[in-house]
Amino acid sequence: MTPPTPRVVGLGGVFIKARDPQLVRDWYRRHLGLDIDTTYGGCTLPLNEPPQPKAYSVFSVFDEGTRYFDPIPPSAEPGPARFMINFRVADLDGLVAALRAEGCTVAEQIDRSEYGAFCWVMDPEGQRVELWQPPA
Image (tube, rainbow, N blue to C red; front, top):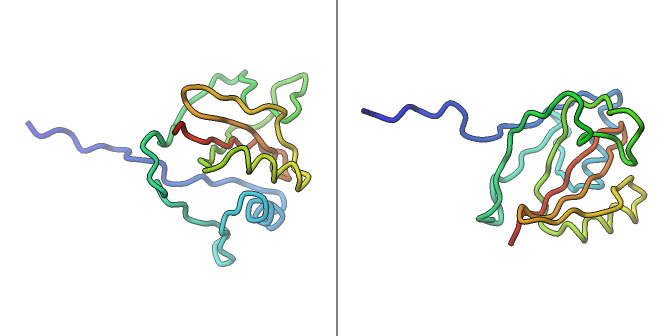
């Protein structure tokens, strides 16, 4: 018997709405270095460059009451966000230092575990963005 063809083979993209799309595009371009195309307002990201054996993409569904997507600093109530973007980065400590120097709202701490290092930054419209450096 032939194994079934996989239906989903990876993350195809992340698409977000913005009140001020140009402001948000410019923020992601300036602070996260994304090469946003002016024609269609997005960019492509390499799947695994440079090769990172412990890097992968995740799709996960959280409970409606999760605080994981909350603004920085946390508010008294769960934030209104229905999603969060996670970007793999090569040098989390260096990026966090640069974002703080550029005046971005960045979480106080970097969480480190066997899954790698994580930190969070807010984009100009209040979306929490997760930054992840996979383990070496």
